[in-house]
Image 1 (cartoon, rainbow, N blue to C red):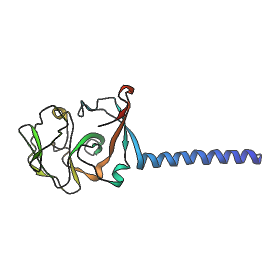
Image 2: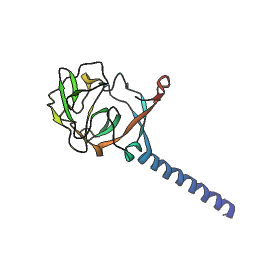
Image 3: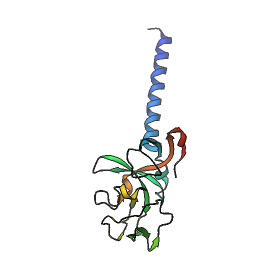
Image 4: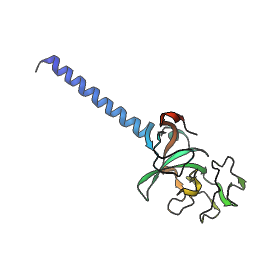
Length: 174
């Protein structure tokens, strides 16, 4: 094999390996793409929308109230998209179709629908855990459910920051 061809092949192999390593690092630590495949976040997010999830945000800080987070659902071995409502050590109470945090009504409450307690009793969010809810409270399996409950910080993958599909809704997610 000609020496120039060998150098060219080695150069291409290095380039391809570098691209894979960079892609792996970006997907693992910086961002990933997520498909909305549930109605629990309507009218904020609809089924079929494609989002960019920032992972790096939560490497340097913790989720804040109102963040739209992606979390691992270990029960169904899939990802859920919910809104962070209750933070560690806060007391969550749902009464009269409203959410209260440490005795104060959640404002904004991120929904136009009433919030049923679905059997959830007034509770303190444990250390390093979060209380999450869908914006479509009437059709959301969230922290009010025993199958989700308080979400461990370790199960929060990232923050939904940008919508890339559909194009007519292209932009920052709020």
